[in-house]
Length: 224
Image (cartoon, rainbow, N blue to C red; front, top):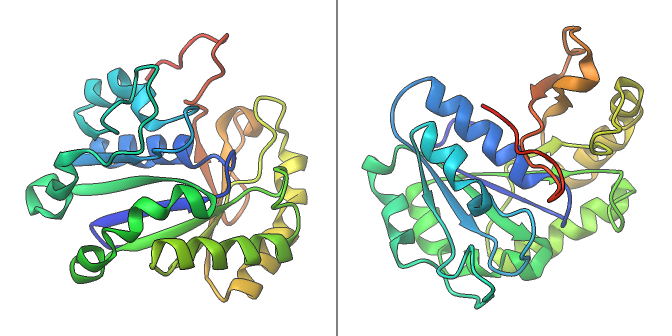
């Protein structure tokens, strides 16, 4: 995915936020400006904006919902969202809300996104309800594309079971990912592999290591 703007969409709980954080931090490590736009204005949990300190500590600019970090959940796009279309924003990663309701905010930006050019990664996780079969994943993508008025350009298999994930779990999800890619007619870009599941071993072919940066409320935050 070579466009300057990358959108990550998918079902609630598929791991979009953790993947967004990983991609943004990796891009920041390569130099140049990086921006994360948190457009999850529906789900109050596991937002990129909850990791502001982590991102800004790595030099990543965060654009968050107007009331992120408060007890209010008003579905309002941040006014500075227009800045993602400026070259000075650098690499942009958009953490879209889950499902069709969560990506509706993107619909208002679709014209400018089409003009600027974008990649949209459809993130799937076979271990989450309502997306446990390739057929369910394909149907969900249709709803997301209709709501956002955008088209996915690639599929990322992010199948995991949180901190209990094993290498066997990752490998068992590969047939699901391959079938989902076939049904959606999208290239399977890669599958993710949480670093702890690899236990120091190199990732299998087609897998990309990621760190588990998103933690539950009772866990210690991840160090970068």
